[in-house]
Length: 283
Ligand code: PMP
Image 1 (cartoon, protein in one colour):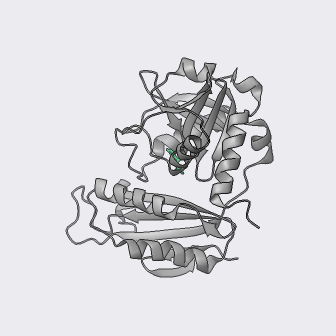
Image 2 (cartoon, helix red, strand yellow):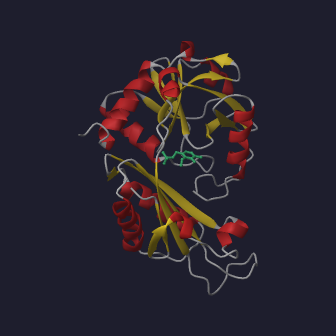
C-alpha cells in the first residue's frame, strides 16, 4: 500500500511533496501539528485530535480553517493509502511569505499531511519495559500547544539514546516531573495512579485523556497532581502514554530500577483496555 502525502488539497507520493523555503513552519516553527493512528484500518479518536488541533490553531491566532477541510484531508488521504496500521501526520503552518517575524497579511495556511506505516513497538520493550533518563525541562511556557518547535524534545531524545537508554523524561528546574519527549507520564503508588495536571507545561495527550476515562470506568483511582522526582523513582510503576506509544512501562530511570525491573500489571491492564477501545483486537 502506498505511503502518501497531501499538500494543500492534492494527494501525491511523499517524495513529490515540496514546501517552499519561505514556509513559516520551516523558518520560524510557526506551525502546529497532529498525529493520528489507525488500528485495523480505522483511525482512532479523530474528533479528539481535530478538537486539539483547532485549539492549537486558535492559540496561535491562525485564521479559522473549516473542520470539513481538515477532516477530508485526513480521512481522504488515509483511505486512499489503504494502510491498516497507519500514522497520519498533519502539519499546518501560517503560510509562505518573505521572512519577517510579524504575521504576514496575505499568507494562506499551508496544510501538509503524510500517511505512513507505523512500525511495531519492539517486542523487547513491551515485554521488559524501557529505560529512561531524566532531563531538565528547557521547553517554552506553552507546551500545551502542539507546535512543531520540538528542538528540546529532539535533543532530550538524542541525549537518552547517547546514554544507551530509550527515552528521556522532562523534570522542571524545581523538580516537578512533567512528561516524556513524545508522551505523557503516569506513576502508580499506593493503589493510585498519578499524572501531571493539565497546565501550560505539558501536552494534553489524547491517550492520557482516554486512559483517565478508562480508569474511571474500571474503578482505578487517578489523581491529576504534581509530583517530584523522588516520587517518580519510588513509584511501583511508571509508564509513558501516547498515540503510538500507547502504554509503555519504564523499568529503569537514571540507572535506578522501577517496578522490580519489569512491566507492571497496571500498565499491562491499561494497555489492553486502550487497545480494545481503539479496536486493535477486531478481526
Ligand atoms: N506529550 C508530548 C510532548 C507529545 O509529543 C505527545 C505525542 N504527541 C504526547 C504527550 C502524547 O499525546 P497523544 O496521546 O495525544 O499522542
